[in-house]
Length: 564
Image (tube, rainbow, N blue to C red):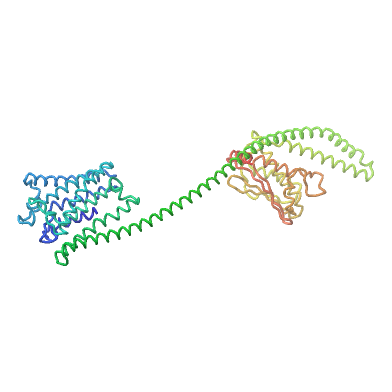
Protein backbone atom coordinates (compact mmCIF):
# COMPACT_ATOMS: atom_id res chain seq x y z
CA UNK A 1 0.00 0.00 0.00
CA UNK A 2 2.77 2.45 0.95
CA UNK A 3 4.57 1.71 -2.32
CA UNK A 4 1.41 2.38 -4.35
CA UNK A 5 0.98 5.74 -2.59
CA UNK A 6 4.63 6.63 -3.20
CA UNK A 7 4.42 5.67 -6.89
CA UNK A 8 1.11 7.52 -7.37
CA UNK A 9 2.55 10.74 -6.02
CA UNK A 10 5.75 10.21 -8.04
CA UNK A 11 3.83 9.79 -11.32
CA UNK A 12 1.93 13.06 -10.79
CA UNK A 13 5.16 14.87 -9.82
CA UNK A 14 6.76 13.64 -13.04
CA UNK A 15 3.73 15.05 -14.88
CA UNK A 16 4.44 18.48 -13.34
CA UNK A 17 8.16 18.25 -14.06
CA UNK A 18 7.65 17.22 -17.71
CA UNK A 19 4.36 19.16 -18.10
CA UNK A 20 2.29 16.12 -19.07
CA UNK A 21 -1.39 16.99 -18.47
CA UNK A 22 -2.51 13.34 -18.58
CA UNK A 23 -0.36 12.61 -15.49
CA UNK A 24 -1.56 15.68 -13.59
CA UNK A 25 -5.28 15.04 -14.21
CA UNK A 26 -7.18 12.02 -15.52
CA UNK A 27 -9.16 14.28 -17.90
CA UNK A 28 -9.08 17.90 -19.08
CA UNK A 29 -12.53 18.31 -17.48
CA UNK A 30 -11.24 17.31 -14.04
CA UNK A 31 -9.15 19.27 -11.57
CA UNK A 32 -5.41 18.53 -11.43
CA UNK A 33 -3.60 17.07 -8.46
CA UNK A 34 -1.35 19.94 -7.32
CA UNK A 35 2.42 19.53 -7.18
CA UNK A 36 2.63 20.03 -3.40
CA UNK A 37 -0.16 17.43 -3.02
CA UNK A 38 1.90 14.94 -5.05
CA UNK A 39 4.97 15.66 -2.89
CA UNK A 40 2.93 15.12 0.28
CA UNK A 41 1.75 11.72 -1.03
CA UNK A 42 5.37 10.75 -1.76
CA UNK A 43 6.29 11.64 1.83
CA UNK A 44 3.25 9.78 3.23
CA UNK A 45 4.14 6.64 1.26
CA UNK A 46 7.74 6.82 2.50
CA UNK A 47 6.65 7.45 6.12
CA UNK A 48 4.20 4.51 6.01
CA UNK A 49 6.88 2.19 4.63
CA UNK A 50 9.40 3.24 7.29
CA UNK A 51 6.79 3.02 10.09
CA UNK A 52 6.25 -0.73 9.64
CA UNK A 53 6.97 -2.77 12.77
CA UNK A 54 9.90 -4.68 11.24
CA UNK A 55 11.76 -1.38 10.63
CA UNK A 56 11.01 0.36 13.93
CA UNK A 57 14.06 -1.05 15.67
CA UNK A 58 16.31 1.47 13.89
CA UNK A 59 16.31 4.95 15.47
CA UNK A 60 17.43 6.64 12.22
CA UNK A 61 14.54 5.04 10.31
CA UNK A 62 12.05 6.24 12.92
CA UNK A 63 13.49 9.74 12.67
CA UNK A 64 13.15 9.87 8.87
CA UNK A 65 9.54 8.62 9.06
CA UNK A 66 8.64 11.34 11.58
CA UNK A 67 10.40 14.01 9.50
CA UNK A 68 8.35 13.06 6.42
CA UNK A 69 5.13 13.19 8.47
CA UNK A 70 6.11 16.57 9.92
CA UNK A 71 6.70 18.09 6.45
CA UNK A 72 3.22 16.90 5.38
CA UNK A 73 1.75 18.36 8.58
CA UNK A 74 3.44 21.71 7.98
CA UNK A 75 2.26 21.84 4.33
CA UNK A 76 -1.34 21.00 5.20
CA UNK A 77 -1.37 23.38 8.16
CA UNK A 78 -0.03 26.34 6.13
CA UNK A 79 -2.53 25.67 3.34
CA UNK A 80 -5.37 25.54 5.87
CA UNK A 81 -4.41 29.01 7.20
CA UNK A 82 -4.08 30.32 3.68
CA UNK A 83 -7.78 29.56 3.29
CA UNK A 84 -8.68 30.87 6.73
CA UNK A 85 -6.74 34.15 6.45
CA UNK A 86 -7.17 34.50 2.65
CA UNK A 87 -3.40 34.93 2.36
CA UNK A 88 -0.75 33.49 0.07
CA UNK A 89 2.30 32.18 1.95
CA UNK A 90 4.13 31.38 -1.28
CA UNK A 91 4.01 27.58 -0.90
CA UNK A 92 1.42 26.89 -3.63
CA UNK A 93 3.67 27.64 -6.61
CA UNK A 94 7.02 27.38 -4.91
CA UNK A 95 8.23 24.64 -7.30
CA UNK A 96 5.86 24.81 -10.28
CA UNK A 97 3.65 27.52 -11.81
CA UNK A 98 0.01 26.79 -12.70
CA UNK A 99 -2.13 28.95 -15.03
CA UNK A 100 -4.57 31.27 -13.30
CA UNK A 101 -7.46 29.78 -15.30
CA UNK A 102 -6.90 26.22 -14.02
CA UNK A 103 -10.21 24.35 -13.78
CA UNK A 104 -11.92 24.18 -10.36
CA UNK A 105 -8.92 25.88 -8.71
CA UNK A 106 -9.45 28.79 -6.26
CA UNK A 107 -5.80 29.83 -6.36
CA UNK A 108 -3.15 28.49 -8.81
CA UNK A 109 -1.20 25.54 -7.37
CA UNK A 110 -3.20 25.44 -4.13
CA UNK A 111 -4.56 22.09 -2.92
CA UNK A 112 -8.22 21.75 -1.84
CA UNK A 113 -9.36 22.92 1.58
CA UNK A 114 -10.49 19.40 2.60
CA UNK A 115 -7.22 18.01 1.18
CA UNK A 116 -5.21 20.21 3.57
CA UNK A 117 -7.33 19.05 6.53
CA UNK A 118 -6.90 15.36 5.62
CA UNK A 119 -3.13 15.84 5.24
CA UNK A 120 -3.00 17.37 8.74
CA UNK A 121 -5.01 14.46 10.19
CA UNK A 122 -2.96 11.73 8.43
CA UNK A 123 0.38 13.33 9.35
CA UNK A 124 -0.64 13.56 13.03
CA UNK A 125 -1.69 9.90 12.87
CA UNK A 126 1.71 8.95 11.40
CA UNK A 127 3.52 10.83 14.17
CA UNK A 128 1.44 8.97 16.77
CA UNK A 129 2.15 5.61 15.08
CA UNK A 130 5.87 6.28 15.49
CA UNK A 131 5.40 5.31 19.17
CA UNK A 132 4.80 1.73 20.30
CA UNK A 133 2.27 2.82 22.97
CA UNK A 134 -1.15 1.15 22.52
CA UNK A 135 -2.98 4.40 23.43
CA UNK A 136 -1.30 6.24 20.55
CA UNK A 137 -2.38 3.48 18.16
CA UNK A 138 -6.00 3.98 19.28
CA UNK A 139 -5.74 7.75 18.79
CA UNK A 140 -4.11 7.45 15.37
CA UNK A 141 -6.76 5.02 14.10
CA UNK A 142 -9.58 7.16 15.50
CA UNK A 143 -8.17 10.22 13.69
CA UNK A 144 -7.95 8.34 10.38
CA UNK A 145 -11.65 7.34 10.38
CA UNK A 146 -13.10 10.88 9.83
CA UNK A 147 -10.41 11.53 7.20
CA UNK A 148 -11.47 8.37 5.44
CA UNK A 149 -15.15 9.38 5.58
CA UNK A 150 -14.38 12.76 3.95
CA UNK A 151 -12.34 11.00 1.28
CA UNK A 152 -15.12 8.50 0.52
CA UNK A 153 -17.63 11.37 0.22
CA UNK A 154 -15.42 13.03 -2.40
CA UNK A 155 -15.00 9.72 -4.25
CA UNK A 156 -18.78 9.11 -4.17
CA UNK A 157 -19.25 12.61 -5.56
CA UNK A 158 -17.17 11.64 -8.60
CA UNK A 159 -18.90 8.25 -8.85
CA UNK A 160 -22.42 9.70 -8.70
CA UNK A 161 -21.58 12.98 -10.46
CA UNK A 162 -22.48 14.87 -7.28
CA UNK A 163 -20.02 17.76 -7.69
CA UNK A 164 -20.74 19.44 -4.32
CA UNK A 165 -19.21 16.44 -2.57
CA UNK A 166 -15.77 16.95 -4.16
CA UNK A 167 -15.87 20.66 -5.07
CA UNK A 168 -16.77 21.62 -1.51
CA UNK A 169 -17.00 25.27 -0.52
CA UNK A 170 -16.98 27.93 -3.22
CA UNK A 171 -13.73 29.47 -2.00
CA UNK A 172 -11.86 26.14 -2.20
CA UNK A 173 -10.14 24.19 -4.95
CA UNK A 174 -11.84 20.86 -5.76
CA UNK A 175 -10.24 17.57 -4.69
CA UNK A 176 -8.85 15.61 -7.65
CA UNK A 177 -10.20 12.12 -8.26
CA UNK A 178 -6.77 10.45 -7.99
CA UNK A 179 -6.22 12.46 -4.80
CA UNK A 180 -9.33 10.68 -3.41
CA UNK A 181 -7.90 7.28 -4.39
CA UNK A 182 -4.49 7.96 -2.81
CA UNK A 183 -6.17 9.33 0.33
CA UNK A 184 -8.20 6.12 0.69
CA UNK A 185 -4.98 4.11 0.34
CA UNK A 186 -3.28 6.37 2.91
CA UNK A 187 -6.10 5.85 5.43
CA UNK A 188 -6.03 2.09 4.95
CA UNK A 189 -2.23 2.11 5.26
CA UNK A 190 -2.39 4.04 8.55
CA UNK A 191 -4.94 1.57 9.94
CA UNK A 192 -2.74 -1.42 9.11
CA UNK A 193 0.61 -0.06 10.37
CA UNK A 194 -0.23 -1.53 13.81
CA UNK A 195 -2.94 -4.12 12.98
CA UNK A 196 -2.46 -5.94 16.27
CA UNK A 197 -3.23 -2.81 18.34
CA UNK A 198 -6.07 -0.34 18.78
CA UNK A 199 -9.27 -0.64 16.78
CA UNK A 200 -7.66 -2.91 14.17
CA UNK A 201 -7.08 -5.79 16.59
CA UNK A 202 -10.82 -6.54 16.29
CA UNK A 203 -10.35 -6.97 12.53
CA UNK A 204 -6.92 -8.55 12.15
CA UNK A 205 -7.14 -11.35 14.76
CA UNK A 206 -8.25 -14.91 14.00
CA UNK A 207 -11.35 -14.86 16.22
CA UNK A 208 -14.71 -15.65 14.61
CA UNK A 209 -16.00 -12.12 15.10
CA UNK A 210 -12.99 -10.69 13.29
CA UNK A 211 -13.35 -13.18 10.45
CA UNK A 212 -17.01 -12.18 10.01
CA UNK A 213 -16.19 -8.47 10.18
CA UNK A 214 -13.46 -8.78 7.52
CA UNK A 215 -15.97 -10.36 5.15
CA UNK A 216 -18.90 -8.07 5.92
CA UNK A 217 -17.11 -4.71 5.62
CA UNK A 218 -16.19 -4.96 1.91
CA UNK A 219 -19.71 -6.12 1.06
CA UNK A 220 -21.60 -3.40 2.98
CA UNK A 221 -19.30 -0.78 1.43
CA UNK A 222 -19.07 -1.95 -2.17
CA UNK A 223 -22.59 -3.27 -2.89
CA UNK A 224 -24.51 -0.07 -1.91
CA UNK A 225 -22.04 2.07 -3.89
CA UNK A 226 -22.36 -0.09 -7.00
CA UNK A 227 -26.15 -0.29 -6.78
CA UNK A 228 -26.40 3.48 -6.18
CA UNK A 229 -24.28 4.14 -9.26
CA UNK A 230 -26.44 1.72 -11.28
CA UNK A 231 -29.62 3.55 -10.16
CA UNK A 232 -28.28 6.98 -11.10
CA UNK A 233 -26.91 5.73 -14.41
CA UNK A 234 -30.25 4.07 -15.26
CA UNK A 235 -32.25 7.15 -14.45
CA UNK A 236 -29.94 9.44 -16.43
CA UNK A 237 -30.01 7.20 -19.49
CA UNK A 238 -33.77 6.77 -19.27
CA UNK A 239 -33.72 3.03 -18.62
CA UNK A 240 -36.17 3.44 -15.73
CA UNK A 241 -37.75 6.08 -13.53
CA UNK A 242 -36.88 7.14 -10.00
CA UNK A 243 -39.49 4.92 -8.33
CA UNK A 244 -38.43 1.85 -10.28
CA UNK A 245 -34.77 2.64 -9.60
CA UNK A 246 -35.30 2.92 -5.84
CA UNK A 247 -37.31 -0.32 -5.82
CA UNK A 248 -34.64 -2.10 -7.90
CA UNK A 249 -31.86 -0.91 -5.60
CA UNK A 250 -33.83 -1.97 -2.50
CA UNK A 251 -34.53 -5.44 -3.89
CA UNK A 252 -30.97 -5.83 -5.13
CA UNK A 253 -29.62 -4.84 -1.71
CA UNK A 254 -31.99 -7.33 -0.09
CA UNK A 255 -30.99 -10.19 -2.39
CA UNK A 256 -27.27 -9.44 -2.36
CA UNK A 257 -27.05 -9.02 1.41
CA UNK A 258 -29.27 -12.09 2.05
CA UNK A 259 -27.13 -14.19 -0.26
CA UNK A 260 -23.97 -12.93 1.36
CA UNK A 261 -25.35 -13.67 4.83
CA UNK A 262 -26.26 -17.20 3.70
CA UNK A 263 -22.74 -17.75 2.34
CA UNK A 264 -21.29 -16.30 5.50
CA UNK A 265 -23.41 -18.58 7.70
CA UNK A 266 -22.25 -21.60 5.68
CA UNK A 267 -18.67 -20.46 6.17
CA UNK A 268 -19.28 -20.07 9.92
CA UNK A 269 -20.83 -23.55 10.03
CA UNK A 270 -17.68 -24.98 8.46
CA UNK A 271 -15.56 -23.11 10.98
CA UNK A 272 -17.77 -24.35 13.81
CA UNK A 273 -17.46 -27.94 12.55
CA UNK A 274 -13.68 -27.56 12.44
CA UNK A 275 -13.78 -26.08 15.95
CA UNK A 276 -15.83 -29.01 17.27
CA UNK A 277 -13.51 -31.46 15.56
CA UNK A 278 -10.50 -29.67 17.05
CA UNK A 279 -12.14 -29.70 20.49
CA UNK A 280 -12.87 -33.41 20.15
CA UNK A 281 -9.30 -34.04 19.07
CA UNK A 282 -8.08 -31.94 21.98
CA UNK A 283 -10.30 -33.89 24.40
CA UNK A 284 -8.99 -37.18 23.05
CA UNK A 285 -5.44 -35.86 23.27
CA UNK A 286 -5.98 -34.76 26.87
CA UNK A 287 -7.43 -38.16 27.74
CA UNK A 288 -4.46 -39.83 26.10
CA UNK A 289 -2.11 -37.50 27.97
CA UNK A 290 -3.84 -38.30 31.24
CA UNK A 291 -3.56 -42.00 30.49
CA UNK A 292 0.10 -41.58 29.60
CA UNK A 293 0.62 -39.49 32.74
CA UNK A 294 -0.90 -42.20 34.91
CA UNK A 295 1.27 -44.78 33.19
CA UNK A 296 4.34 -42.61 33.75
CA UNK A 297 3.41 -42.14 37.39
CA UNK A 298 3.14 -45.90 37.77
CA UNK A 299 6.50 -46.35 36.08
CA UNK A 300 8.02 -43.68 38.32
CA UNK A 301 6.59 -45.39 41.38
CA UNK A 302 7.93 -48.75 40.19
CA UNK A 303 11.28 -47.20 39.40
CA UNK A 304 11.38 -45.57 42.83
CA UNK A 305 10.72 -48.94 44.43
CA UNK A 306 13.35 -50.52 42.21
CA UNK A 307 15.84 -47.81 43.17
CA UNK A 308 15.07 -48.39 46.84
CA UNK A 309 15.56 -52.11 46.34
CA UNK A 310 18.76 -51.45 44.42
CA UNK A 311 20.01 -49.12 47.13
CA UNK A 312 19.25 -51.76 49.78
CA UNK A 313 20.93 -54.41 47.66
CA UNK A 314 23.93 -52.10 47.23
CA UNK A 315 24.12 -51.57 50.99
CA UNK A 316 23.91 -55.34 51.52
CA UNK A 317 26.59 -55.80 48.86
CA UNK A 318 28.89 -53.33 50.60
CA UNK A 319 28.45 -55.27 53.83
CA UNK A 320 29.07 -58.51 51.98
CA UNK A 321 32.20 -57.06 50.37
CA UNK A 322 33.45 -55.92 53.76
CA UNK A 323 32.74 -59.35 55.25
CA UNK A 324 34.42 -61.03 52.28
CA UNK A 325 37.47 -58.80 52.62
CA UNK A 326 37.62 -59.65 56.32
CA UNK A 327 37.19 -63.34 55.53
CA UNK A 328 39.94 -63.15 52.90
CA UNK A 329 42.27 -61.51 55.40
CA UNK A 330 41.43 -64.16 57.97
CA UNK A 331 41.89 -66.92 55.40
CA UNK A 332 45.23 -65.44 54.33
CA UNK A 333 46.33 -65.24 57.95
CA UNK A 334 45.17 -68.81 58.53
CA UNK A 335 46.95 -70.06 55.40
CA UNK A 336 50.10 -68.23 56.43
CA UNK A 337 50.05 -69.72 59.94
CA UNK A 338 49.04 -73.17 58.68
CA UNK A 339 51.83 -73.33 56.13
CA UNK A 340 54.35 -72.18 58.72
CA UNK A 341 53.13 -74.88 61.11
CA UNK A 342 53.29 -77.52 58.37
CA UNK A 343 56.82 -76.60 57.36
CA UNK A 344 58.33 -77.67 60.67
CA UNK A 345 57.25 -81.38 60.60
CA UNK A 346 57.77 -81.48 56.85
CA UNK A 347 61.34 -80.33 57.33
CA UNK A 348 61.92 -83.29 59.66
CA UNK A 349 60.37 -85.73 57.21
CA UNK A 350 62.47 -84.27 54.39
CA UNK A 351 65.68 -84.59 56.45
CA UNK A 352 64.84 -88.19 57.35
CA UNK A 353 64.05 -89.08 53.72
CA UNK A 354 67.28 -87.55 52.45
CA UNK A 355 69.23 -89.39 55.22
CA UNK A 356 67.68 -92.72 54.23
CA UNK A 357 68.51 -92.10 50.57
CA UNK A 358 72.12 -91.13 51.28
CA UNK A 359 73.04 -93.72 53.98
CA UNK A 360 70.73 -96.70 53.53
CA UNK A 361 69.68 -96.71 49.86
CA UNK A 362 71.91 -99.70 49.07
CA UNK A 363 70.53 -101.69 52.00
CA UNK A 364 66.96 -101.68 50.61
CA UNK A 365 65.71 -104.07 47.99
CA UNK A 366 64.26 -102.81 44.71
CA UNK A 367 60.80 -102.31 46.16
CA UNK A 368 62.19 -100.40 49.12
CA UNK A 369 64.26 -98.13 46.89
CA UNK A 370 61.13 -97.30 44.84
CA UNK A 371 59.25 -96.41 48.00
CA UNK A 372 62.12 -94.25 49.32
CA UNK A 373 62.31 -92.39 45.93
CA UNK A 374 58.55 -91.91 45.96
CA UNK A 375 58.76 -90.56 49.52
CA UNK A 376 61.42 -88.01 48.55
CA UNK A 377 59.41 -86.93 45.48
CA UNK A 378 56.20 -86.45 47.51
CA UNK A 379 58.02 -84.58 50.26
CA UNK A 380 59.38 -82.18 47.64
CA UNK A 381 55.89 -81.86 46.09
CA UNK A 382 54.45 -81.10 49.52
CA UNK A 383 57.18 -78.51 50.15
CA UNK A 384 56.43 -76.85 46.78
CA UNK A 385 52.73 -76.90 47.58
CA UNK A 386 53.24 -75.26 50.97
CA UNK A 387 55.50 -72.59 49.46
CA UNK A 388 52.95 -71.91 46.70
CA UNK A 389 50.06 -71.64 49.18
CA UNK A 390 52.15 -69.35 51.36
CA UNK A 391 53.00 -67.23 48.31
CA UNK A 392 49.32 -67.14 47.17
CA UNK A 393 48.08 -66.07 50.60
CA UNK A 394 50.57 -63.23 50.85
CA UNK A 395 49.91 -61.67 47.40
CA UNK A 396 48.63 -58.11 47.90
CA UNK A 397 48.80 -54.85 45.96
CA UNK A 398 51.46 -52.84 47.73
CA UNK A 399 51.76 -49.54 45.90
CA UNK A 400 54.71 -48.44 47.99
CA UNK A 401 56.69 -51.25 46.42
CA UNK A 402 55.81 -50.19 42.87
CA UNK A 403 58.29 -48.53 40.52
CA UNK A 404 59.00 -47.97 36.83
CA UNK A 405 59.67 -51.41 35.35
CA UNK A 406 61.00 -52.05 31.83
CA UNK A 407 59.02 -55.12 30.79
CA UNK A 408 61.46 -55.85 27.94
CA UNK A 409 64.25 -56.52 30.47
CA UNK A 410 61.83 -58.38 32.72
CA UNK A 411 60.70 -60.70 29.89
CA UNK A 412 64.31 -61.38 28.85
CA UNK A 413 65.20 -62.35 32.43
CA UNK A 414 62.25 -64.79 32.49
CA UNK A 415 63.36 -66.32 29.18
CA UNK A 416 66.90 -66.68 30.56
CA UNK A 417 65.56 -68.83 33.43
CA UNK A 418 64.23 -71.45 30.98
CA UNK A 419 66.94 -71.50 28.29
CA UNK A 420 69.38 -73.87 30.16
CA UNK A 421 66.68 -76.57 30.63
CA UNK A 422 64.66 -76.49 27.39
CA UNK A 423 65.17 -76.51 23.64
CA UNK A 424 61.97 -74.56 23.00
CA UNK A 425 62.39 -71.24 21.18
CA UNK A 426 61.09 -68.37 23.36
CA UNK A 427 60.94 -64.88 21.80
CA UNK A 428 59.52 -61.40 22.44
CA UNK A 429 57.65 -60.29 19.31
CA UNK A 430 57.44 -56.52 20.08
CA UNK A 431 58.96 -53.98 22.39
CA UNK A 432 57.15 -54.17 25.69
CA UNK A 433 56.22 -50.96 27.55
CA UNK A 434 57.51 -49.46 30.77
CA UNK A 435 54.92 -49.73 33.55
CA UNK A 436 54.57 -48.63 37.14
CA UNK A 437 54.14 -51.90 39.03
CA UNK A 438 55.61 -54.33 41.54
CA UNK A 439 58.42 -55.90 39.51
CA UNK A 440 58.41 -59.23 41.35
CA UNK A 441 54.67 -59.72 41.00
CA UNK A 442 54.55 -58.98 37.26
CA UNK A 443 57.62 -61.17 36.78
CA UNK A 444 55.70 -63.95 38.52
CA UNK A 445 52.84 -63.55 36.00
CA UNK A 446 55.15 -63.83 32.98
CA UNK A 447 57.12 -66.67 34.60
CA UNK A 448 54.05 -68.78 35.42
CA UNK A 449 52.55 -68.31 31.93
CA UNK A 450 55.84 -69.19 30.22
CA UNK A 451 56.36 -72.16 32.57
CA UNK A 452 52.88 -73.45 31.73
CA UNK A 453 53.63 -73.12 28.00
CA UNK A 454 57.00 -74.85 28.34
CA UNK A 455 55.41 -77.72 30.28
CA UNK A 456 52.87 -78.50 27.56
CA UNK A 457 54.96 -77.68 24.44
CA UNK A 458 57.00 -80.90 24.34
CA UNK A 459 57.91 -81.19 20.67
CA UNK A 460 61.14 -80.47 18.70
CA UNK A 461 59.80 -77.40 16.89
CA UNK A 462 58.21 -75.92 20.02
CA UNK A 463 57.82 -72.13 19.99
CA UNK A 464 56.63 -69.64 22.61
CA UNK A 465 56.00 -65.99 21.72
CA UNK A 466 55.52 -63.07 24.10
CA UNK A 467 53.60 -60.19 22.49
CA UNK A 468 51.90 -56.90 23.40
CA UNK A 469 49.18 -54.63 21.90
CA UNK A 470 48.20 -51.05 22.71
CA UNK A 471 44.47 -50.97 23.68
CA UNK A 472 44.16 -47.19 24.41
CA UNK A 473 43.71 -47.43 28.19
CA UNK A 474 45.31 -50.84 28.68
CA UNK A 475 48.20 -52.91 27.46
CA UNK A 476 47.15 -56.37 26.27
CA UNK A 477 49.93 -58.95 26.70
CA UNK A 478 49.94 -62.48 25.30
CA UNK A 479 51.97 -65.67 25.72
CA UNK A 480 51.35 -68.03 22.80
CA UNK A 481 52.59 -71.59 22.20
CA UNK A 482 52.21 -74.23 19.49
CA UNK A 483 51.51 -77.06 21.90
CA UNK A 484 48.61 -79.54 21.91
CA UNK A 485 46.01 -76.91 22.86
CA UNK A 486 43.20 -77.06 25.42
CA UNK A 487 39.56 -78.08 25.04
CA UNK A 488 37.09 -75.17 25.59
CA UNK A 489 35.40 -76.86 28.54
CA UNK A 490 38.66 -76.62 30.50
CA UNK A 491 39.17 -72.84 29.99
CA UNK A 492 37.73 -71.79 33.35
CA UNK A 493 38.99 -74.80 35.26
CA UNK A 494 42.68 -74.23 34.69
CA UNK A 495 42.63 -70.89 36.59
CA UNK A 496 41.20 -72.52 39.72
CA UNK A 497 43.36 -73.42 42.70
CA UNK A 498 44.99 -76.89 42.55
CA UNK A 499 43.33 -77.76 39.21
CA UNK A 500 45.39 -79.63 36.57
CA UNK A 501 44.50 -81.13 33.21
CA UNK A 502 46.55 -84.34 33.53
CA UNK A 503 45.89 -87.23 35.89
CA UNK A 504 49.57 -87.96 36.34
CA UNK A 505 51.64 -84.81 36.73
CA UNK A 506 55.30 -84.31 37.32
CA UNK A 507 56.37 -84.05 40.96
CA UNK A 508 56.54 -80.24 40.85
CA UNK A 509 53.15 -79.70 39.13
CA UNK A 510 50.63 -78.60 41.76
CA UNK A 511 48.13 -76.56 39.68
CA UNK A 512 48.62 -73.17 41.32
CA UNK A 513 50.81 -71.19 38.88
CA UNK A 514 47.93 -69.92 36.70
CA UNK A 515 45.85 -69.15 39.80
CA UNK A 516 48.65 -66.95 41.16
CA UNK A 517 48.96 -65.20 37.78
CA UNK A 518 45.20 -64.55 37.74
CA UNK A 519 45.20 -63.11 41.26
CA UNK A 520 48.09 -60.74 40.51
CA UNK A 521 46.53 -59.50 37.24
CA UNK A 522 43.20 -58.84 38.96
CA UNK A 523 44.96 -56.87 41.72
CA UNK A 524 45.98 -54.45 38.95
CA UNK A 525 42.39 -54.23 37.65
CA UNK A 526 43.29 -56.40 34.71
CA UNK A 527 41.75 -59.50 33.13
CA UNK A 528 43.25 -62.85 32.13
CA UNK A 529 41.83 -65.33 29.64
CA UNK A 530 42.90 -67.73 26.92
CA UNK A 531 42.07 -68.91 23.43
CA UNK A 532 43.05 -72.33 22.16
CA UNK A 533 42.59 -74.75 19.29
CA UNK A 534 43.37 -78.40 20.01
CA UNK A 535 46.36 -79.57 17.98
CA UNK A 536 47.40 -75.99 17.07
CA UNK A 537 48.29 -74.30 20.33
CA UNK A 538 47.10 -71.96 23.10
CA UNK A 539 47.39 -68.22 23.74
CA UNK A 540 47.04 -66.72 27.21
CA UNK A 541 46.08 -63.02 27.33
CA UNK A 542 46.15 -60.59 30.22
CA UNK A 543 45.71 -56.82 30.49
CA UNK A 544 47.40 -54.21 32.66
CA UNK A 545 46.36 -50.55 32.84
CA UNK A 546 48.70 -47.93 31.50
CA UNK A 547 50.59 -45.85 34.05
CA UNK A 548 48.55 -42.67 33.42
CA UNK A 549 45.25 -44.61 33.51
CA UNK A 550 45.92 -46.55 36.71
CA UNK A 551 44.07 -44.21 39.08
CA UNK A 552 41.10 -43.92 36.70
CA UNK A 553 40.94 -47.69 36.41
CA UNK A 554 40.86 -48.11 40.18
CA UNK A 555 37.97 -45.64 40.49
CA UNK A 556 36.07 -47.29 37.63
CA UNK A 557 36.53 -50.70 39.24
CA UNK A 558 35.21 -49.43 42.57
CA UNK A 559 32.14 -47.87 40.91
CA UNK A 560 31.49 -51.01 38.90
CA UNK A 561 31.60 -53.17 42.05
CA UNK A 562 29.22 -50.80 43.84
CA UNK A 563 26.74 -50.87 40.93
CA UNK A 564 26.75 -54.64 40.77
